[in-house]
Length: 282
Image (cartoon, rainbow, N blue to C red):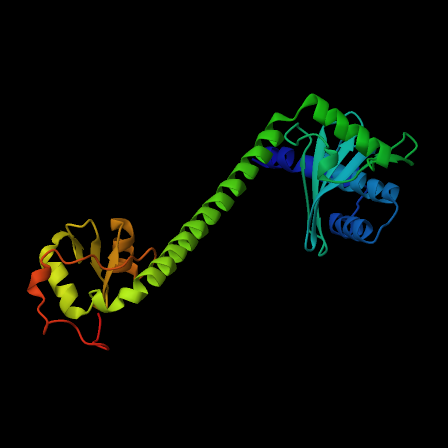
């Protein structure tokens, strides 16, 4: 057991020796401060190589690195060592550090994730992934010529969804506007003959309900095709659509309401039964 414990602890001990006794917490703090305060990228690359050597042994020098995720007090960095796969290094302002990868689990450096710094064999910064205006135009043209199917379909789908929402809203508004205009025209036409029309008072609504057939709870259908819906407060409204009648009954939503139908048995209304002005309606 003692021999097994020695073999298990040996790699960790070698890792500390490989790092020349460097404190990983201090290295993490230096990397975090260096990135956020604009230190020379070459200096940050040296610190990355040191912290990788502490935990992963093999990193003769960092050839490229990229800050691909930046969060409050935390940075995620991809580092490419000469001859090795990518390493992931997470550092925080409080000295927290984690090193992972080196076995191909990390995706390749992508310029769309962040700026990529590249270094020569001497350790000097050789280039970065910033694009000039001409390069940006050329790259855009190349992508359009090659055709990015996923992005194109995504854009088309988003455009279709937005267009459908706009058409739906416009259709509902137009329908409501037309109904309102039609009602106003009908009122203007009926107004001269208002004294000959039957008002939808409580008595009239009771008679209309007697002539109607119950099709659902608090929803009745008159022989004329008009639906009569009773709301939560007992008010009775008229609709041409059973759907809007159900919406009024359940939610109290008054949309696309129509006028009361004519009584089928008009003769039951005598001269004395005509409703007076100001009679309460429900």
